[in-house]
Amino acid sequence: MMELQEIITLVRRTKAFVANRERAGHIQVKGPADYVTQVDTDIQNFLAEELGKMTPDIQFLGEEEGLHEMTADTYWILDPIDGTTNLIHDYQHSVVSLALYEKGEVTLGIVYDPFREDVYHAQKGQGSYLNGKQIHVSGAQTLRETIVSVGTSPYDREVADDNFRRIRRVFDRSQDIRRTGTAALDLAYVACGRTGGFFEPLLSPWDFAAGMLLVMEAGGKVTNFDGGPLSLLKRGSVVATNGKVHEELMEVLK
Ligand code: IPD
Ligand code: CA
Image: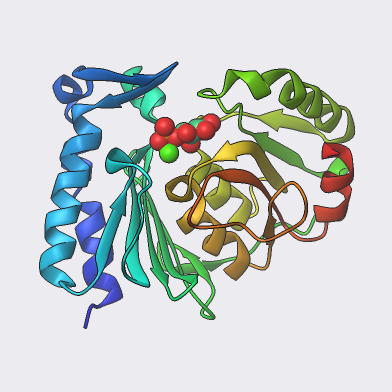
């Protein structure tokens, strides 16, 4: 069976791919403002192959092959680069996000930030960690005491009017808003208490699978915009908070 440290060591080996600026310049357009670089593909190929050797019985779902019917109840969910647009511009905010989905729930989540050499990880029922040290969500009781990060759903511009209205309302109620360009890192920041919350109207399972577990294991709460649980099989809206400001944020998002 696999060892957590082996998986983390494997994920950290992706740093060499991220550092390759020449490969980041090989860009293909997937959709409106939606790109894939050779770095995304290199990392997905590398991890699919290495995870395949380490855990031959576990299937694999990666962003660069897209959503498809899974025939097993256990599989890896990978976003090889979350923050591809950032990577193209060398904005230095991109992460690798890997989750293990087992029988209806995420049991392991790893978000690796190669620019800061930070590894966030969580295992179901065992807490969340940043570089091996346990992390917790922030203690803020109200939005007024915290900053909130937002996602703009850049590939679905038809939701922008509603979403920017929400962002404006949250800005009015909180200390300030932030936009990093990587949802997986936004969730990791909620988990370690840097922000009190994060929301985005349309994300894919590979964007949020690992980060969702990080937030929950750090004592926070994650739902969709209706307050229900997230599906790991389809795209959906995401609200993640420290728990204490969840209701207030949901109210403002309505
Ligand atoms: C994107 C990032 C971004 C978010 C988008 C995602 P990608 O993922 O997480 O922050 O706003 O909705 O699709 O395309 O860079 O892997
Ligand atoms: Ca992504």
